[in-house]
Length: 134
Image (cartoon, rainbow, N blue to C red):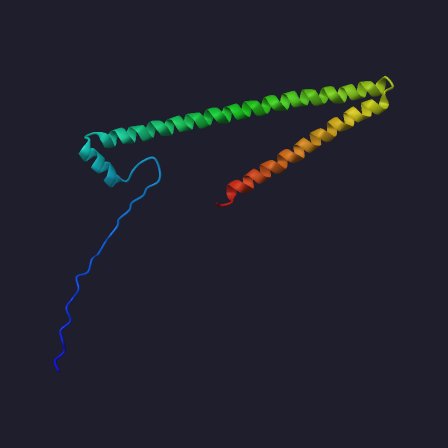
């Protein structure tokens, strides 16, 4: 008996190609293709990315300056309020209202300490979250 020759079945190959990039600019090969379709497109895309980068840096600087200003204003107002409350407590003690004066001065100092501790802990937590990879 002769071996029957097996017929080869045609095979179908399907291939998918995907490309991804991250950031403000496409891949250089894509820029060339854009430039082939619309002359000057690559230059316009680069200029757009540069303008966006400058805008982002300016906005971040503005926000940072504003945050710093608000922090100082908050410290000054908080310090003035605390000094006023402690001074008021001392004044109450001096006129014979010692229980009220001690309560006001003590609660003011306790509140300042609590705000300081809370702020320290929240900043530490924020720094830890920034350093922890997601």
